[in-house]
Image 1 (tube, rainbow, N blue to C red):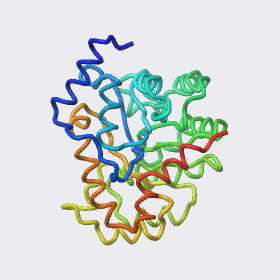
Image 2 (image 1 turned 30 degrees about the vertical axis):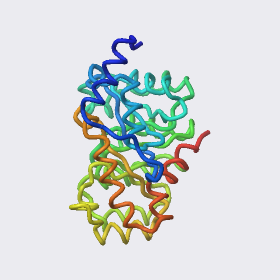
Image 3 (image 1 turned 135 degrees about the vertical axis):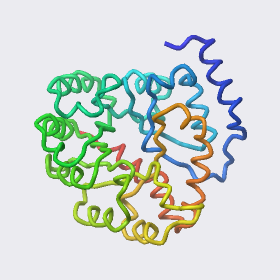
Length: 276
């Protein structure tokens, strides 16, 4: 656990970074669907420091997955009303490319899921037909059995395969497929009601702060399917966290108010409520 000295040091680091003014009452609240609190951030950011950043960015709640999972559990235990735990199949660094071929992943996930705090499995990485591996099939079945969603950093082919592996399991598509444009994303969203999309690191949604017309049309067509996220995969992402949320609100406010609320909070809250 964090000592009082470490906790104070983490909070001081946030203040020193200039995450200055707390959010004002008129800020559009956000539920961040893509956060990590991995071992690479523990030295610089205590749980108290992370929660202070969420406060200053007016982030109501966050979906958190971490390598190792201990980071997620630490945040959850510090603020169980604000942290939505998601379980990664990675136990340590270096498993990103190999997890889908490792049969020990499934018993590890089963052991962790014995504590009923998790709402999803992921964020995990897959490309193409890697999603057809026996391990991935078993993970999808675990998700179905426990009423969890799958959070996948994957290409369109892997996303489509995942959607077919376990009936009724929702797939949260990280980074909107990273390289996929609004036409391709729209095709997949239109083909499956189980596909949800988060937009972490997608600067093309609003280049220069101006909402792209193609993305805007897609959000208006499927207002219940998109969510916002950040991806704090390295410590510097926490350093710029408040600015990221400020920029996100710039383009959210270019949408009708009801659609902006759905993308900012309501769709994520709905996903978090799903269970067995």
